[in-house]
Image (cartoon, rainbow, N blue to C red; front, top):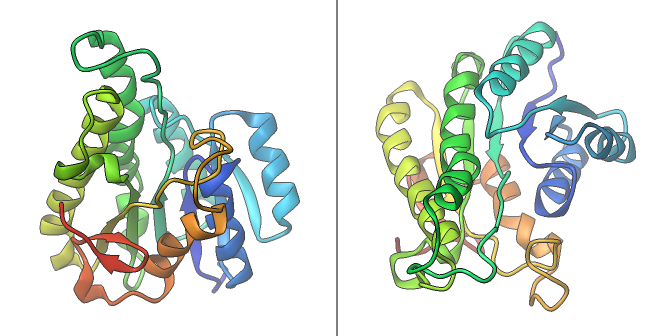
Length: 231
């Protein structure tokens, strides 16, 4: 088996996830490019070079998650870093008074339950790493002071991601696994739009830092720009 550090980044075919994967490859990681769109995922992996490989993974589907974990287990004996980045932002034209149950379910399935289920499925591989790290990508919209009635399902799903991080830290810290959550800020991606204030490099920076340098003592905290922020 390879001695290189091994990472999985979900939603890594574009945007912040792709930039995180690119920077981890540059730091010597072997990176699994998790994506539900096969063509886009394979293209991203090819562009990132020999350190990247495509992994079919739809975080909203348990069967897809289980199969992805099985595939990774066939090729490696461990996972050192898991970055739960995949997410959707489907609230245009809705608010907390008009959002239907179906939209809430759809958003939670990807943004919140997806992060948890991927963590559960890959836990056996994470437990075999010496000091594994899990980084969940949240948002300022998930802060209690940042909740917006105009972005209902996304805000609530990211609030749940923060809660999931707290619970995972409680149960995984004794196993030597660190769990962090971070806000990338408003980033120029398909989700953030061309008018966003930050580059993908700025958006990815804290996640890469948490994956490679941050102290394990900071497990269970919420970060922006490498600094702890309030829930």
